[in-house]
Length: 199
Figure 1 (tube, rainbow, N blue to C red):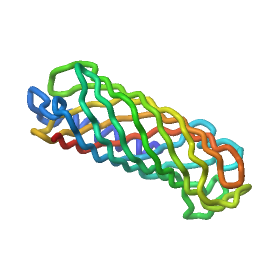
Figure 2 (tube, one colour):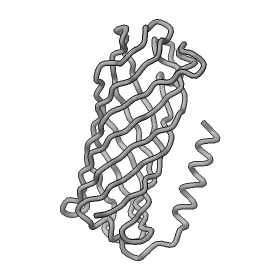
Figure 3 (cartoon, helix red, strand yellow):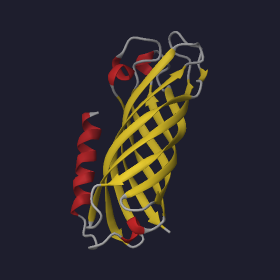
Figure 4 (cartoon, rainbow, N blue to C red):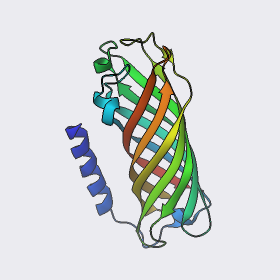
C-alpha cells in the first residue's frame, strides 16, 4: 500500500507539472466521457477486521463516467465501476479476490470557474454487487445489492482541447449481504486518474 501511495503521489505531481492551456474548454462542454484506472484500497474493518469477509487488500480499480455540465460550477455524473480486492486474509484461496461491480451517481462541484487546473469535490451514491469466492464462513457467490455513499476530491487538468486528465481520490462506504447471510461492511478508498474526452 505504501508503494502504491508513493507511485500515485509521483503521478499526481507529474500531472500537475504538465503544460496546460489557460482555459479549460472540456470543462465547459455539456458532456464529458471519463475512463478511470487506479487502485481500490480497503480501509477500516474491511481491511483488518475479524468478521466474515473482512481482511481485504488493495487491487486494481476501473471505471467509466459520463459527466453532464450544469449551470455554474455544478456537474452531474453517472458511471459504472469495477473494484477488485484480494481476499486471502479473509480466508479465500491464494489468488482469490472480491470483484465489486456497480454504479455511482452524484454531483461534482468545481471550486473555481476558470484556470488551467480546476479543483473539485464530489458527493454521490453507489450501488454494488460483489462476486465473492468461497471464504472462511461463507460459501461464495454473488452478494445482494449493496448501497452506500461516496465523497471525493480531485483536479480537472486541461491538456489540449478536447482532452483532459482528471486525477482524484474518493472514499466509499457501502454495506452488502454475502451469499451466506453475513453483512460485509465495505469501506475503501479509490485513487485513480481518468482520461476525459469532451463532446
